[in-house]
Image (tube, rainbow, N blue to C red; front, side, top):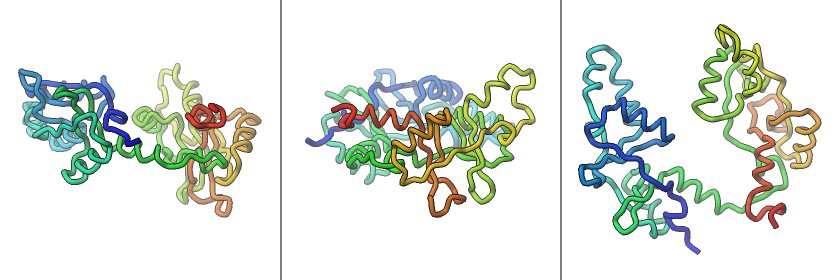
Length: 270
């Protein structure tokens, strides 16, 4: 059965008026944890889209006092992209992908009987592709997270904390100049510094990181689970067994294994 736009859209649309200041738009984006707002007119009709990338352009253009004053006077209506592209919620996901590709759009407004009900973005399309891939659960490589957050050993702790907050990652893998994993910094490692007056000032990730436990990508999930339990760790660094000192291939965590157990179609859900 063909997947439809409504199956992958983000329900709900966050809107603003064209006279909203860029500062107000920034607050709304952060509060609602979204990447874009739909700009509407007095009759609540969509007239444009304003994204976080649009605001980034404004931030970089306001490098000096004079240009900052100019940017402060701009509104959502000044930076928005228009016209707005709408797609019916009952259209197949392939139609959304085709329209994004042909028009170089990163997102479309989803409508039902002419009323805005959600947004579908490029990342949603990617998610639909991922679901079509046959799921495997034999080895660490089948379940691990390929994308990881890394930093060098001389990274200030405050910058690592900021990166973890912005990306919502629970840990940072610390590597040396050659990409060899040296350790891991997790949220728990920060706790001793939370009550200090100087916080993390002056500290580097190398000062608080804990040793990295590694596991080959072709190891079984049972081996990964056993290693996590035996060492009271929540994550393992996945490496290439033939090149153990090379840049890590990914990370597998206790959450990754639990998520696999919860997946529809998993042997645990049969």
